[in-house]
Image (cartoon, rainbow, N blue to C red; front, side, top):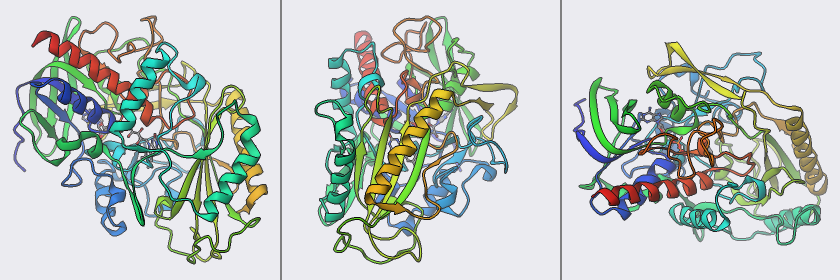
Length: 510
Ligand SMILES: Cc1cc2nc3c(=O)[nH]c(=O)nc-3n(C[C@H](O)[C@H](O)[C@H](O)COP(=O)(O)OP(=O)(O)OC[C@H]3O[C@@H](n4cnc5c(N)ncnc54)[C@H](O)[C@@H]3O)c2cc1C
């Protein structure tokens, strides 16, 4: 393995190549004609096209790249039993710490995961991309500012609003959801098809959007102004006074170290490792790694009995590959509405059995994400003496559910029970279950944005770290509100604003 050729000086250094890092890089590249950009990721490159979503590959070609994403410590990788392991870690992700039998499921976030590969979680994600609503929105951005950023994010992520052709089974499920819930929503809001980051392809599965779609032409290969360094960890952000001056990188296979000078630095290294890198660099605002916010996740599956299940395209039982997306025929949302409906519900229809040996028919998978009461005490602690598998400060999560959280969870279970009663019955063993803390993979708040530097936020509304002229953070960790909605679209929208702030600053000085 030879040392990569890494430039000594760039205009923008981006840490992390997931959807958020890619959005920042692409937008600055398009806006600032001469900007030289280096994006680094500690994980390996998985596909020739940078950041291709792995679900665009045939099932048998996914396992190897998924395994490469699962980090350096085999004790934190998911087991072979995809369906059960998913409760703690999906394929393509790895746990923050090894799973210990008998550990409480809701304290300390035992299912906290990350992905370590070029493209990050963005090559594994389920592509659900709804907009935040009501109290989920960022209170100090105007509606026009947030909506413009969300629109730009939808374009980068190629969001389709009604991607699946309607089937009789899907129609039955949607009508049932509307009968049950329409009256609980304000005017104009009701259960509907889920917006998904994908390009529909008639007669076959959609093309799922990974960071490659965000990067556009930059995903096809090197560009004279844009470079991706894989298997290259950022160990430290360097700074003098209120300016980031560059970063210290290490190419992991060779141990070669580099100091790269940069005019702006954006850290989009996920909601756990972004605060980890800032902390390791000696940048420790009061709110750093506090206010950690995971959406409680409630899951169940229903067999449809009360309706025209014949002719729904039932194909008999199939081997469950561990990912329901290979079987789904429609995805619907039961949207969030403050204050009465504090969840975002995701309903997936499958016209064939996801359980080996079950009768063919129409099945429905339900995942409800609830809002979490935000607490300063929910936080990541960084060790001053122990290191993780990458040699960075070891992380321990402190995290508890409140009484209010348990009420939200009970309401989610009740929703799923109403749907099951209307459609048929729960599959045995698949009654509504609260999954372990961390299993949402939607961690937020650890580098949250705020309107003033009052100790409760890490960055301003452009995600610029308080007290710095040119250091930015990105990712779900930036979201300051208690959301139930899947957060990636919001994070990419906030990254669009970050990119525009970086571009303006770079253009002002060229
Ligand atoms: C199976 C699965 C399904 C999901 N489904 C959905 C969904 O349907 N909808 C939704 O909104 N979200 C979903 N998510 C979450 C979604 O993927 C994330 O919100 C999104 O990827 C976040 O993007 P990001 O760029 O901020 O971080 P990531 O995609 O996590 O990328 C961060 C990158 O930073 C790199 N990195 C970390 N530390 C360093 C360092 N020190 N130096 C260099 N590189 C570093 C990592 O290797 C990683 O590649 C899902 C996730 C998974 C795993």
